[in-house]
Amino acid sequence: MAQGAADPSAPAQVIPESLADLVERPLYAHLATVRPDGTPQVNPTWFRFDGEYLWLTTTTRRQKNRNWRVQPAVALSITDPDRPSRYLEIRGRVERIIPDPGGAEFVRLAERYGLPQGPPPDSADRIAVAIRPERSTTQ
Image (cartoon, rainbow, N blue to C red; front, side):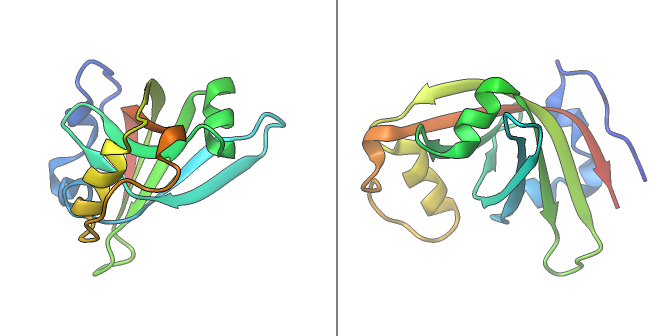
């Protein structure tokens, strides 16, 4: 098991080059957050990596948004669908939460995942969320 770099000023280095395809491809990630009572919550999610942040979208009304506002530490697990034993776990912190009432991040992610569509019906409550990768584990 390999550990990624811990330097938060260089998040791209946290993701090993040998597994960079897992953040470049439109794969689903499982996002783990910590509920206010200390129990974990895991949800599948679309994401993108811009070289600094992992971006995702949700609404202000969802539990995961309440979770990271109390405890910003999160983890994402991404599995290679062609080789399920090959995976990347990225741990980091929610660093930015940006109101996105036009649903622009949702539209961007839908296009990335080959499901182009307009803004979702819940756009008024949408947020774009930036996670700074801090550490990784791999297989």
